[in-house]
Image (tube, rainbow, N blue to C red; front, side, top):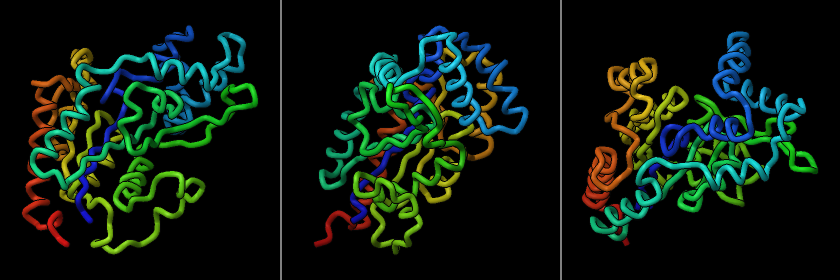
Length: 284
């Protein structure tokens, strides 16, 4: 056991520009107006962000102002949406790093996002993830969105850290949401938190950053270079460093010689060495 390192990613503004905003723009919705004049008033009235934007998307879909939002159109956008530089190659690069250090240590990738699951499960990189957890719509018999089926936001994300830790994912656990509460003794945990790396960018990632950092794992904050002129986003990113929520803060650039690729490489190398020295990979 304990021969696995888990790298856990957020998606929007971490691996790609905001996927929901991209979809809304694609179907003809005024994106700034949608967030500022339709979603924000709901949040000001006490709504949580994800149900607020899901509600407004359903309202838009039913209004006749645009073509109905469907499972198929969300999936098509997932296949088309742009990714940040180097994203499609980072998975194999990091697997090679781990294999070079110790071929008995394996690397797994997970995605925990507040974004729309139908989009994320149809991206060009979806196959790289052992599991994808995201917010989801229910669909009618014509494939149109009708109601939220799953909401993932803020501390909801930490639940899935424990799914990774305990190995509670895959077809055997569909429809069994309370399995994550099952007590598992530390020696039997599939991936200890100190063998996890969390990569994210925003407020919804803060609980995961904190949980992974307190568990002696590594939290890395990223920011979109193209949005660096946004003072609020820049201050928020720097705040993660000041508050000790992340160990490093770098641009969301996954190309071969980028600071982020270097950071991930160093963390993976050191985790593999630590696992090897502890003797986990050489028992029996």
